[in-house]
Image (cartoon, rainbow over all chains, first blue to last red; front, side):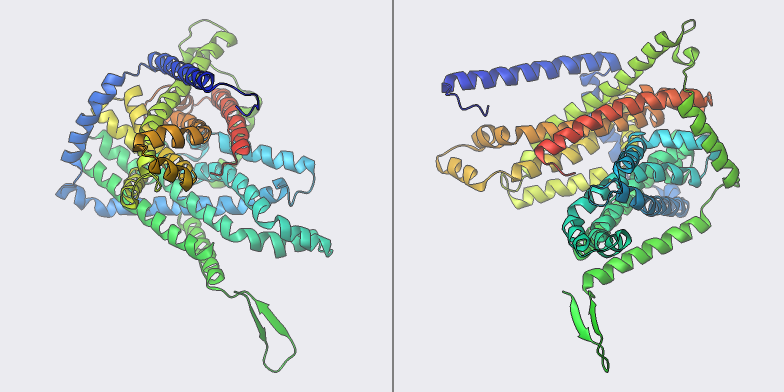
Length: 268
Length: 288
């Protein structure tokens, strides 16, 4: 499209139209293939939406029995919040050295760049569900298993995020300090960390929010935290209690999001 | 906002940033540190010997990654070697990719409409804010719960998985799309408006053509995320695909080598997609 050759408008529009048509046809063909492979029926999907809406309207509000379980639900919720804070903070600590080694600005040498980027990439691309299943074998059904799964997935994500943060925030000050003869530890302590810390904390806050949602998934798989609570009520068809679990997660996630957004406004 | 002070009665000058921001930063760090330490002291391990479990895990990880192999029977093959099993496993990966694709497509169609409505330059601030608040609530419910809620109406399977996974896709893509639309030069819209173009004409002649590459890139990035989500839903919500195989290998057969085999499969697909997504992000200067 960036060619300078002159093209008549009608030809241009015809070509554009052709491109769009090819793209749409390809999208439709792939989705038909995908639907038959997974036995997904669009009609079923449309039919399910009103049914679920009716169900939600009927079961959204907790009854007395569900409310009597609130203390237990809150207990598990607090566990889950701790699990995600711990995983995010611990993973952030572990990520810093890897991010320093992998960043263009603060790299030691090419070998460590490849090594730390590779480790981060493998950690990030193994889904959190897979981590949960791996740790379940040795650590059993416990909050600690959930913590470990979240830790490794978060570690991979934060290492990459921190690398980008270091490159963006501190490249110029690192150059300045190097020019006046500062040693590597001095550069890290006086330029890299102070310049990148606010953005890094912002990433950690983001991971805490994300991890509360992921913790629900991990909890379902590893029998811990709020996910396990939901699973129990859901499987025993006590939908009003299950719905109370969902509502409590929504409240916590929104509260943490609001809190971290206002913190972000102050520290960034 | 840095303050330069002279220490009373001495010749030392104190140069220190004691801005509001740095005080808050320290407070956040301190609170996080305290909560984390407290968490470690009180975490429930159900009496598992952590040292032994860590050693076991290290051993398992070694076995997983050095000697991965599938068990044909677990993939529904009675007699056959590695290759037929790999074929069935690849099909399971394809199912997971298909779930991710359908979710992304449905999410993209819905997000395109609401993304236009959520863009401040195309509608009013009130409409935009309303949509963004609804999205915040939708995103607060974890994906797995959306899938399980829809499983009540549609049964466990692809339908519940795709609709359930679509919710976070809407949220993510509406935000991404509307921000791409907001990048559009205000002058272009004004010029079209002044020449009497309707809202739809503005959308189809100016907004969409100028942001189509961003839209496609963001959609692919979400597809990459949805693959991981689809793996998780296969494991936790009966959505099928390779996630279900992983769940069976780890939760029923306790077969570490098979977990390794499946993990490698997932990793291979995820790495290829990450490579493409990274290229797209570099090319279009996209920041997540």
